[in-house]
Length: 88
Image 1: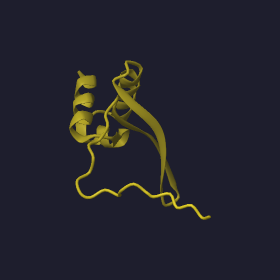
Image 2: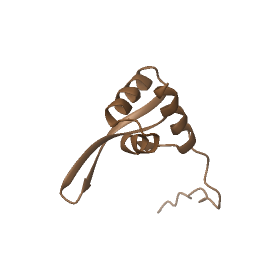
Image 3: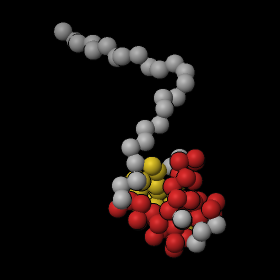
């Protein structure tokens, strides 16, 4: 049941840290990390380890997102192709 709750939260909110998932869902951080490891082995999510520093305090965690998810292109103008300029 916790795997479904974590997976649904990631689907709704996109890429998140394990700390953010634990805080939002009310599940203990250790249990969230175990659930994320299970979802990773099943191939349902992608995760990588990250380190943040808050002043002198080091915080290690995992950043997760749904596997195979490619975010949509942002609206607005895009840069055009660059021209190759050769100097002769």
